[in-house]
Length: 113
Image (cartoon, rainbow, N blue to C red):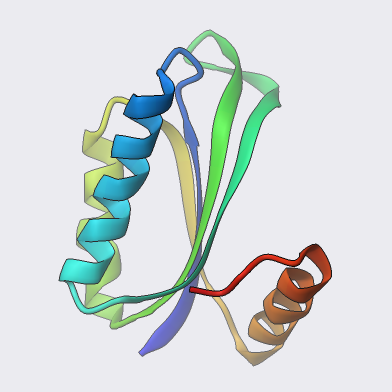
């Protein structure tokens, strides 16, 4: 099991229910494929550094999870197929990044799942 972190940006025109449904969809995908959620954060609506799909802002979300390596490819394919997702990035964390993420969570009082 590897430790991963995924940040994704959702379209700013989505309603709160659509955002919750989208986040739940990706969380369920991970859980159904043997991943264990470590933490998830909703960073809210943020201004983008440059326009993406003619949009100047987006809803940011972060997932931190452990999963087998073969789960990542279908997970990213699901992101590419979903029109509500503007951008995403999945990164495999090494032991130093995992320690830094734990330290960051405790500093921000984010509860681990």
